[in-house]
Amino acid sequence: MLITIIWALSVGVIETPWYSALLFGLEDSRGQLPAHIYTIIVDIRLPRVMLALVVGAILANSGALLQGLLRNPLADPGVLGISSGAAVGAAFAMLALNQLFPDIATALGEFLVPCFAFLGGVLATWVVYRLGVTVWGISVSTMLLAGVAISSMAMAALAAINYLADDLTLRSFMYWQLGQLGGAQWWAVATCFTVLSLQVLLIPWLGQGLNALLLGDQEASYLGVPVETLKRTVICVASLGVGVAVAAVGIVAFVGLVVPHIVRQCTGPNHQILLPTVTLCGAWLLLVADTLSRWLLAPLELPIGIVTALIGAPVFIWLLVQQRQRMVS
Image 1 (cartoon, rainbow, N blue to C red):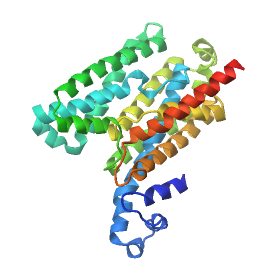
Image 2: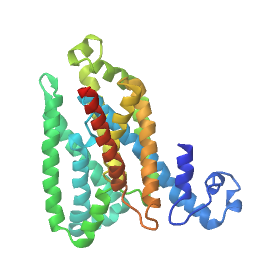
Image 3: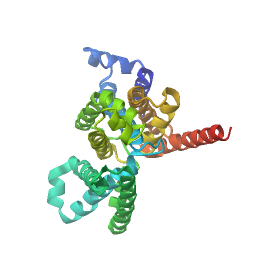
Image 4: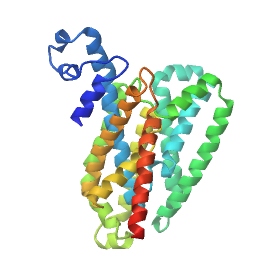
């Protein structure tokens, strides 16, 4: 992790010596480093590195929580329609507010897209949750079907918005939808870090409850686990995490799907070990992906969602092939 952070702070359009990434933390570093190098590292690259770490940790942790809740290692944070709802909110903010209510868009400024993306994710989660609640408790299968329905509706809404948008708005929305960490701000880092801290603090309780839930709802309740409270907490924590992450950087694919799946092959299904390990690995993976997006085609920059898909999809296919071979043998 430390080596990757130094690498991330050193590469980009303007290459900086690797030791400059170590000097910026010294009190007299302004005198030891050229002014433009200090500005590049501290004001531009450091917020981006920190945002990549916290968002990667949030997405991976949320994916592991949802996979444990749904008892399906192939589940994804977008399975409940959170990412799709956030995308609709962002598209509405970029298209409708900018064109129909320019005064409101101007007043919100840089908070316009993140706020509406978060609201869209929260609304999608609320609808899925309400559809999944029955007189017998929360039905996981109903929530999955509701998530598929919400995602389909969101895709239709996005298609309509894209059809009505002008070329400039459509291009900016497509770039946001593919994920981007450029122009990272400290307020986004602080917001995501607050949500990540909540997830980390709940790991001991959630890990123990998800371990019991692997035996089944009824068996977990016999062991004294408040099953319905556990389900509500997991849904709220994971949805809050994904909503904040999507609002901050856009839609980033495969981190919440591949990282928990890989780590589970190494650590086993014990969530008290799985969750903290997944959190660290997710942070590291997204930082590597973001650094590659800035380094591979410099001075061009690839959207982070493309890089994570290029890394995650082949790895995931390989894992599925390995799992299939083990089942056959």
